[in-house]
Structure formats: structure tokens, C-alpha cells
Length: 381
Ligand code: PLP
Image (tube, rainbow, N blue to C red):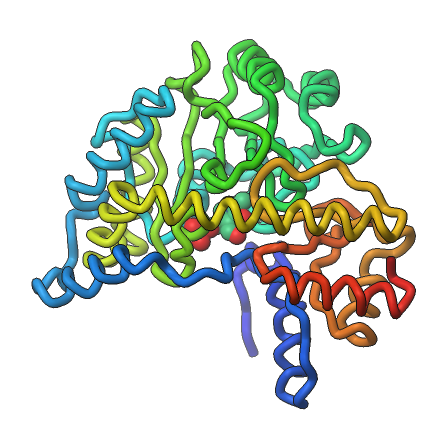
């Protein structure tokens, strides 16, 4: 009966959603599930931001805005980027409903059928789907053999990159590994990108959530401003997942093309949400610091708990994820984790990293301890 477009057949539903569905089904049966699968801070959105959103609605900011976003927010974003040495003017910024939409529009503006796109594995689930929907071909560089670091894998990246490469996606701090790529690694990316005239997407959505490392923006490296699309969002840093607010910053020719996709798909990000976003950028640094401190303690707890069970992992330096080796089929491991231990995790295969399970430690310390006890009791650690 249905004759679906070929492109939707190229992608699978999100693995994180599949795990979430299993967890919900168990919870409906009354089971207490420890959910370590969701990439979402367990903190409420800081009150100042919520108040700004309420005030914006009260003031009647409920209509469309200009497609690329209100000037005040694009100015605040531009100032924020300049503080990271990314030379982006307000006109270089497109405000989107979430960083995901910014990535989607970027990929669709740059990738044609058959174009080659490089991902650094383990890679966030949606990159692959976005590239496939656009008809691109994937080349993958595995960081798994290098403790998830990029610098020791630069030779592999050099071997993967050619003049045929249309796009390289770099995500640091990384979901799912928590790795923060060093300046040396990013300088290596720059050299390769310039040599092969490749555009790079820098997904820096976790750049405020770091512990031992201070990440540098890729677009701040010499020679990168003209070839980098910087993507960021409010979901993680400001605990604003449900508000749906993000952005991209790119050279103007690319902004012109992306804007076409943007205006014909979402029109604009929600008006009052954009105004709350201005407040987020301007005035909640101390709330962010409090959340990051809590994530750091949880990161330490997770590393310690794993060590207690004889598993040592590269210490995640940012974001709120860790990859646990599963010593066998990761799908079987995550199935047992949810079905027997009632702990929800995501199989590494979803990130093209079989043999691992991703946990999110954006959950409270007690829940983390409970989750690890249950996994250990089922012999999964
Ligand atoms: N990029 C990465 C690496 C992510 O982990 C996420 C969310 O999980 C996103 C982008 C998208 O975030 P949002 O669309 O909520 O801004």
C-alpha cells in the first residue's frame, strides 16, 4: 500500500529511543528502572531562564521571529563565540530548534548523493542517519584503539581523507566517550582539512561541561574560520533539553544556503524560547558551574565504581557519558542490563563501537550506585 521514499529506508530508528521504549514498558509494569540511557541533565532549567521564558510569553513574544533568530540572541551568541576566539558576527549565526536541527540543515546544505563524509567513531547516533538521509557515503575512523583520543589516530584520519571528502564531523567533548580532543589533535585536523579543502562541522554542544580539560573551538585555529561550521546548543549546558534551542555559526555563503532549508522547514526557533536563551547566555554561569561540579563528582564516582569491579576506562574529561567494555556482544549485554538488572544503557553498536555500552551519568549519585550494584549482581561488571 505504501510506497515510501527510498531515503527513509536507509536509516534505522534511534537506538536510544528503542532502549527508552523498553524502559517505559517495564516501568508501566511497576518495575523500578535505573535509567542510565538518557543524555539529559537531571537538573531543572535554572530559575532565571524559566522566569525569562514566562516573562517573554507575558510580554506577548509569541509570534514568528525573523527566520535566523532575533538579533539580541544572535548578538549574544556572537559575543560568546568571540570569547572562544571564533570570529562569528551575528549574521553568521542561525538559531535553530536544537543543535540537532542545526546539524541536519548543515548536512543537507553540504552533502550531495554519493558525497563522502568522515565520522570519528564512536560517533553520536544521529550523524550517520543525517548523512544517509542526505544520500552521503560514510567513511569511518575508529578511535577505539586509541583510548578514544584523536591525536594518535591522526594518521588514520589522514589515510581516510582525500580530495573526494566533502565533510568531516568532529564532536568534542564527545558523546558517547567523554573525550576532549587536544589542541595538537585539532591542529592536525586543521592541517588535513586545509590540505584537502574539506569543510568541518565542529559539534561543541558539551563545551561547557568539562572537568580536567579546557576545550578549544576548532574554528579558532588559523585557517579554520572559513571552513568550519560551529554547532552548539542550550540543551546540555543550561539543562534546557525540552526548550529546543541551538545554533550554527558559519561563513556567510553557507549561512545563505542553510537559511533556505531553515526557513522552508522550521521557519524559526520559538520566539519566547529565544528570549530565554539570551538570559541563559548572559546570566547563569554560576548555575552552570554548580551543575558541572555535580557531573564531575559523578564522573569520579563512575570511574571509581568501575575500578572496584576491575574495569578501568579512559577517564572521561567532558560531557556526561562513559563507555563500559562489555567483554562480548554489547546488544546481549544491554538486553541483559535492562531485562535482568533493570538498568537502561545504550549498546555501543549504536555509535559504531561494538563491545561497549554507553552509560550517562547525568543521573543522581544514589541512582548511579544502585545501577552499578544491580549490574554487578547480574554478573555484568
Ligand atoms: N550533538 C550531540 C553530540 C548530542 O549528544 C546531542 C544530544 O544528545 C545533540 C547534538 C542535539 O542536542 P539538541 O538538539 O537537544 O540541542
